[in-house]
Length: 228
Image (tube, rainbow, N blue to C red; front, top):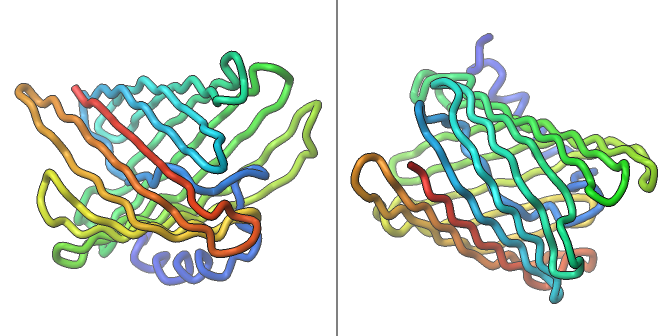
């Protein structure tokens, strides 16, 4: 497949979609990158907080090859007394880094509600491109949800991150999210702390501000990943 020829129509599609959301909730979440590291293992903790409500994800993942990475998550929130849901995720790196004008990957997620027979299946196209110290990552996601307690529907979500590689320990970024219930923009900071024998701690923290009446005024997001 010629990814260079696909680039322009895909980017046009990203900015022409009008019904973007994450399954009737916020579209604000982690921005994914298309890369897979061979022999990588990871523990991830993620939190999204808005309007006194928090969602937590605890993940454990590993690469199965130099192109495929899988991760499982436990999902909980502060308004429930127990675990809310389970999620299985797989990321596949489509192109070698630097092989084309942009780097490409795909992501597939399957989530199951613990308290009912409700499901969510999502697939995302991941794109990343560098301009010197500037790096753009774009995620375009399609989501289908169904079950006993929810209406079956197909939705989509868009997340864009523009990051400046100031140093390994500190990288400022600006993130844009768009969804049926989300229009938001805000600053994020992140960095890597490297240890011996290929071990690394990656961290991200940011506040995303709502741009319309449907989106919370501010949403905080935190993420830590320990790779080993």
